[in-house]
Amino acid sequence: MILTYGQLEATLAGHLRIHPDRLGTLRARIKQLQKLQFPPGVNVGRGTKMAYSGAHLFQLVSAFELINLGLPAATATGLVTPSWRVIAAGYALAVANPSWGRPNDIFIRLLNSSLEDLTGGLDRHGWTSRAYIHDRKSLIDDLYCDYRRPEFSSILINASDVVRSVLQFAEQFARVPSPLADDEIRSWTVNYSDADYWVRVDETWREAENTF
Image 1 (tube, helix red, strand yellow):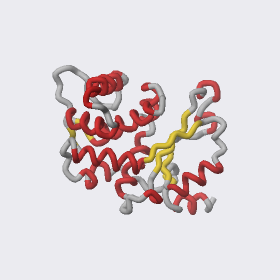
Image 2 (cartoon, helix red, strand yellow):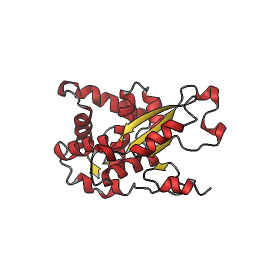
Image 3 (cartoon, helix red, strand yellow):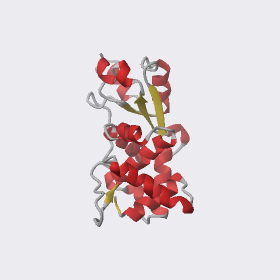
Image 4 (cartoon, helix red, strand yellow):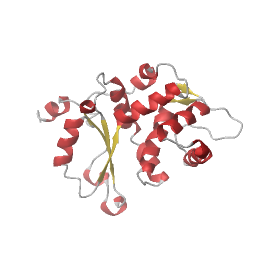
């Protein structure tokens, strides 16, 4: 997926339900994120036309989802950037979901702690991921037995809802052809493996963990 800035802004505005009179404010918010070097790889120099990828679009969408929850911009981008591979895989699985029904929604769960500098954070326990991909069953199971809850808050993004909305507006407002079949988004798919333990979709991960 290759977008001009105009297509990117139109898709974001549609997804975020921005009033036409407030598009200038949205533009300023995007520039604020760019000053934080977000999305990574975007050139903010004057007079330079920038082509935006599907990754840039969904990174911005993810950051705005978190900002909409009340997180500061720097905190939101600080969650999205290091966890992008996981987040992207969640969106790809949502796109690949053939039924597009509520029982089959895909969720992205982010672990956040504003007191991480006091608790020692993930590193103290040897954890390397602060993001997980769930289906409905694995989400309920993990939340029920998650021993990290006292230290970390779980932030949920319904990846299926986001994908439905973003790709609808990408096609409707930005005139992106067949966004559901986009090769870039589909290339983000990751299946469970020992290295990708954060994929909690279907029972494959549980069967693997039960072998230890």
